[in-house]
Image 1 (cartoon, rainbow over the protein chains, first blue to last red):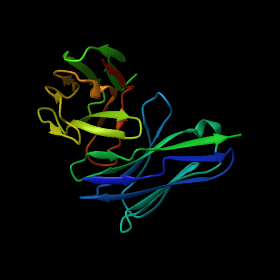
Image 2: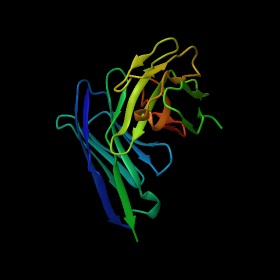
Image 3: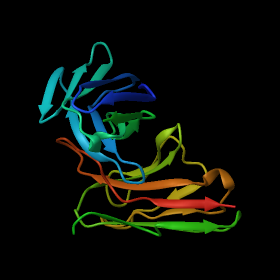
Length: 109
Length: 113
């Protein structure tokens, strides 16, 4: 099974940078995902890491260290629309995705 | 618009009633999933199907059943609803292999009284 931990809440100022950490323990690692979920909406895909290192996609970057069971999502140049819940998810060898409880990010003006 | 359609969007039902949540995708994805989302617990996998004709149990399968008669449809049935099944239910699909990102439906909000 999977044990996935991420902070419950984070607050940051518009234009700033926020880093959301995720640690996991897994029996059979086959990729790590980050999803964004606005209140009342479905989750949407942000990023995917299967090898160690940094994946950059515009204002969002995701990092993975498989040996440490650790990932982070970096949000740069924060905008008000980035206020949402960010979900860390780990995929196992059977292609099942297990999610952390999510980190609610609030962006303040 | 291609994607995943769930029905109903919202439903209130009495405890003990039978309920089926419908899910249809038109992306021809192999794999489909049902999750429930509860405050503070995040998304938890109920059942999944890696291909038509096969299903598997997730983290919280008790009280739920699924079928996968074809590629497009993956209904979730609550045989006898209980209040603890009050939740938001999300259906998702993906291609196995490559990135395999999940595409989610808009969710079904279920209240069991």
